Length: 83
Image 1 (spheres, rainbow, N blue to C red):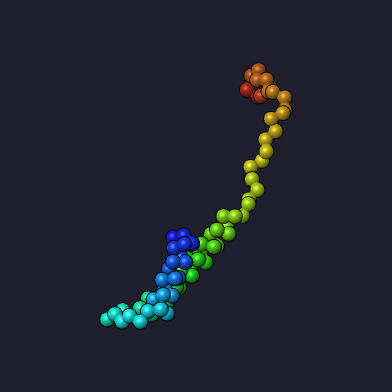
Image 2: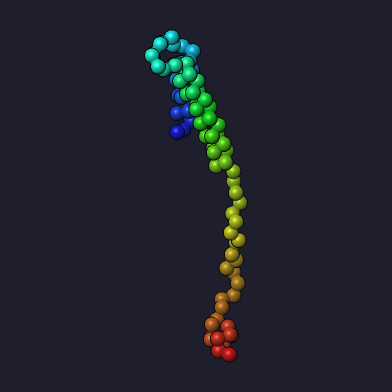
């Protein structure tokens, strides 16, 4: 769920809690609204911590290889195989 979904959950929860006076048998809409708002806030906190972690720039861990050295000549004896 993205940031937009979390904000929608918060808005729907606030509407159910503060702006409605519906009565349903067996369902407390005020409690459902509060639960939606809490879940939305947890989602916003989680999303923001993940987004902050993605922005961290990590320097490359691999060493830079310098290919400007002289070319190697393999004659079969200088690398230890012909001894």
